Length: 603
Figure 1 (cartoon, rainbow, N blue to C red):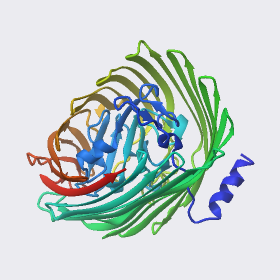
Figure 2: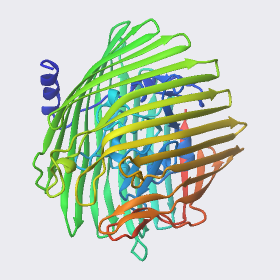
Figure 3: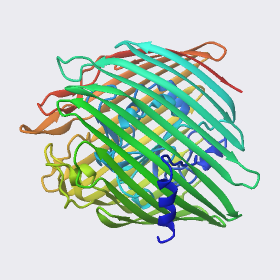
């Protein structure tokens, strides 16, 4: 690290904002890639089809996002295979994403390759990522610390803002709905083999709905924008950058808060030889929060990252060798004992192919000045039984770092807390055909020192066991599109045999769409089983499960003009996934309707 560390320090210390390049592998993806076995980059750091990745992966395409017209990012994740979501109400309220029973801060969120999280809380602010500006989402389930380091215990979610389609395109959209909800957006992109440019902006606001029974409406507004550019020179050198910024205000019971959710990054990729390419990526992510309540405060996190990767090929085999340097900085009105920490890492990956058999090996070492040294590894094996069937098996270790709150928050933190460590196992089989696919996976994760704070003190569970089964399927034919997923899990504290708090152990999701001429019709039904919450001074409380039915209709009423109507929670079901300190349910908004008009051209 004697050479790499000073380079990393120099690169970010001399500038207020650093940059990170666009994933070139995604930009170069073939337009003829099969929709039911798409190419993904998150599972192995480079392009592989879902089947070849040897991972449990769900892809949400630009078309899926446009059809669903989500108002919050969590709507795309809810009840997907292995995923359960909880929130303190609707529209910009605190949201937690539990993947395979792991905590919300045990899943990594990437935006165009840039990792963002709050170093104080430990996890990302899922609620502030604007879905209106996203072109694609990849959900990779299972431990990935051997590739991404700390916190990739449950998996990795990566959101992309860059379009894949070649040519020029642009869009303008405006819409409104009940709860005085309004949305306005516009964007333009140009993509060629050598150069791409993308810029877009969106504004969303709503008066919101009560978050507890008998409460007042709690509003939310989010002004967001994205920008990116990439260029490949004639000698094969590629440079690029991407950025996303969202700022706004969210009201909650007892106050409100201003937020900033921002990623920016870029870099350079150089072909050294025909079998060796090297890239240097730099990035900065900001999670900033100013709270206005009876306990006001400022909690600003800045994470700067430098990442060096070397890709080498030998026949059908690929190898990755890299190093990474990260610094977390916290500025707060709360007096933390420490306000920054650095992490140095080395990692390697081998993607080996032997005809129908694939072997993936990965190894990483992280050296963190706050919690010490952690080494993680991963092994994946896959075998194509035929052109349609593949089996896979994975095992590996992962860990979750204690947050600044866990370690240093006055009266709450415990500086002696150890990182959460896990070893995971997974086996799966899939079938992929011209018009449909199915995927079945079983998994188990044994966790030591599982982070599980009470409402007044950081803490952990000595041992936990998380296991389950996931089944997903999809079908497309003659304008019809069907997606289905069912997950059953058992997430328990081994000492007490109790279900872990706030995780639903059974989820189901069914989406059906039909294109009929200039009309589009669709519906989604999703359900999650009961869960428990631990309420200070009251104890363990059961929260009933729920089911939700959504409808959507679209109409192309003129060339390049579309109208979209969505009705979410058609039956106006009242349900909750979290309780507050006073044992009140944090309820979600009831039935909501939204109508938008969009002009979009492509040439």
